[in-house]
Length: 110
Image (cartoon, rainbow, N blue to C red; front, top):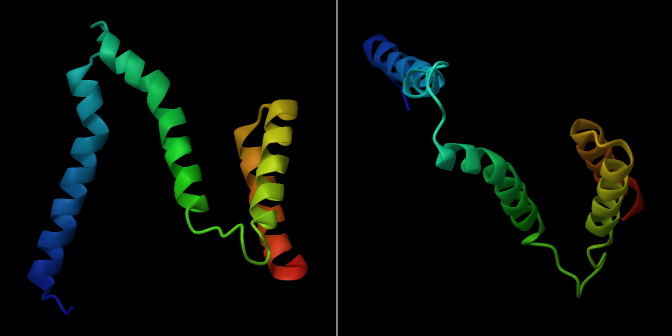
């Protein structure tokens, strides 16, 4: 899609304003001197786990356990992620090592 210079300025201007609005909106709606509503606190506790669950389901939706490699790379990577997370409680470490292990398994083992 070819856009004119004016259309590009309009496009990136709208994106910039929207991004700025999204970043500052929580600070405007819930200022520091005002108590955060209970439902927002609840969503803050629940949503990260919900999103991670949705990502896991999305990532595993196309894995076939009836054909080679029978979901073995995914299962091994998930097992390593769980073990590392229980052992170190470091999300970045467990996800990073699990991802690298999964890619190594796919590229060199299976």
